[in-house]
Amino acid sequence: MGGGGYGGHRNPQSSEEADRLGDLVNPARELMLVRRDLNDPEVDLTDDRQRRRIFYTDGRTLKKQQDSSYEEIAAHWDGDKLVTDEKAPHNGKLSRTYEVSSDGKQLLETVHVTDSKGNHPMTVQYVYDAVDPSSLSTSRY
Image 1 (cartoon, rainbow, N blue to C red):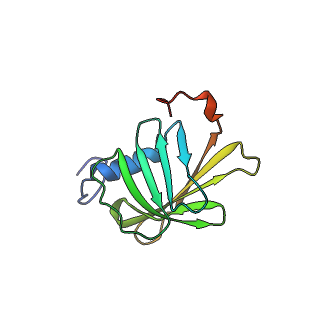
Image 2 (image 1 turned 30 degrees about the vertical axis):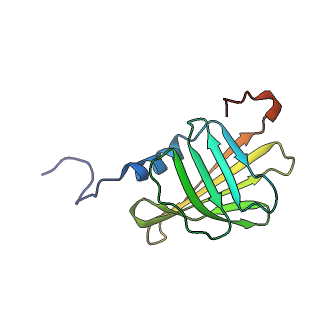
Image 3 (image 1 turned 180 degrees about the vertical axis):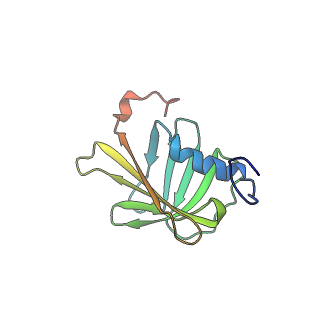
């Protein structure tokens, strides 16, 4: 008779997978999202943990992630929303949607995760208040 815990064999998660899931329960406290102009296919996101994500909306081939501090992610525009389609742990799917609130005072990040069969969907939404960029020092994000 065994004790509690998980049954069967489990594959250990990679550090990347653990980081992705960890971000769902412990998100960044601050984000800086930058798009240089409306025609630029690149949107840069930097968080308070000095991690940088580059979202490309032009379908280019992306570099394989080397470490958790820099990542290139395929994305597309759905109206004014920036939407990503990413891999989640265990062949699941993860999608993030970034949009500015109608009053322009908040950034909404919605994360949707499903397993490899599309079961057990989970949606989490984070709300970030806008900060006047002139109040930030150059070394703080």
